[in-house]
Length: 251
Image (cartoon, rainbow, N blue to C red; front, side, top):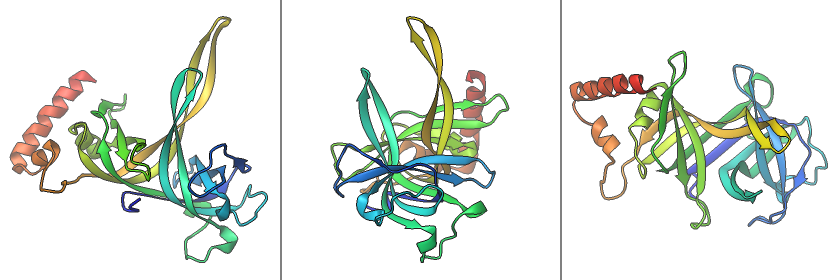
């Protein structure tokens, strides 16, 4: 895989034991572990990572240890209870413990890091909306190449503000590049049963975009979004005003 298409870097704290995974990957036996990466706001994102055995360096328990994990963000389709589920995780190429770090990266405390870059194609038209406070948000799925061309990675993404407006103009098949971070989000799921409804706490994983750009494919083909952006500033402003006015009535 081209590292420029999918590159993730997390510095944080190990908050779970190592769980041996059922599947064997191209790197042999792997373990699943959860890493807590703290944002500057103090909020923590707890991110699942799949770590090849060779990266663990014969450690037995890493809970509480600082670690830097570098790799790619992947998805895997899991079929359970008659439904398809999309599992997201950081697939690790390097797993460097804080007491062995030699690369100059800051470890621990307020300097925890969480950054990611992806390049791929919009899977379906983004969903644009506004919060009750007027914040602009767009959700979309990005299809990113994987080592197995039969199974690309499908990554849920969320854009904010001006990036959300840009994303709202995109169409399925548009080629884009983004930078951001992996975030975890807790939500409540209502389960309907014969004995009544129950509420279950679940965690969703997604990419929160920090920057977003539309790319030009080989041969000079541009997406409709790019053509709009390259029009005259006056036309661009008029279209944007018309779009936002229309979206404001629909949200």
